[in-house]
Amino acid sequence: MNLDYLQGIISPVFDLWIFYKVFKYKFARKDIIFSLIFIALSIIFSFYKNSTDFAVSMIQVIVIIVYFIVIKKQNVKIIFGATLVFELLDLVLGISTTIIELTIPVYYLDAGLVMLIEEILFVILIQINHLRIQRLLTDSNSNIFIGLLLYIYLASSIIYFFVLKDDKLSEVLDLSLGLLVLQITFSIFIYLAGLHIQKGLLSKQEQRT
Image (cartoon, rainbow, N blue to C red; front, top):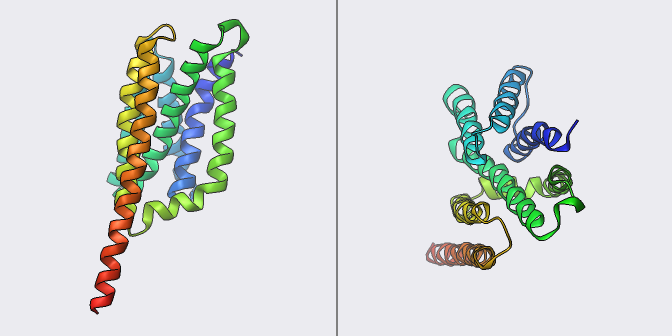
């Protein structure tokens, strides 16, 4: 089987695993149907010739919203945060793989293999840090953290759009990567500043009481 096709099948399984791991959801037998629908629709749309990564992401988000928010009435904020985590990792995979393809001659590598290796690394990363991510999605500063994820996702999506329009490593790509680094650095700074301000306000309230 071609590695690109294999990766296309593994990718939605990877997404769903991250979602469940970060969501801290107790998987039940009845959730198998949802999981199969999620994986099947992701595969179908990813192999459709006119489909895009954005379209696949939207399908995944819609399926999750319908099942976990509309049907199962789960916490909207945690669902949104967990979905952002795996969608952001998907985006990072796409950007990094595209950059590698543009910088290394195609006969040296297979894009499917590159993404497969990256997904394995992300699985290890999530396995090590999933409890920390769960806390960030549920603690008193969760709104700030989810806002950070959303900001980075939107900024990265814009960068990815320019990367895909470039067929070679050019000034546009260099500029896009520079902007991405600046955006991520800026958003992390805002997040840390927000935490510092919030802690200061809490300490003042405690002193008054």
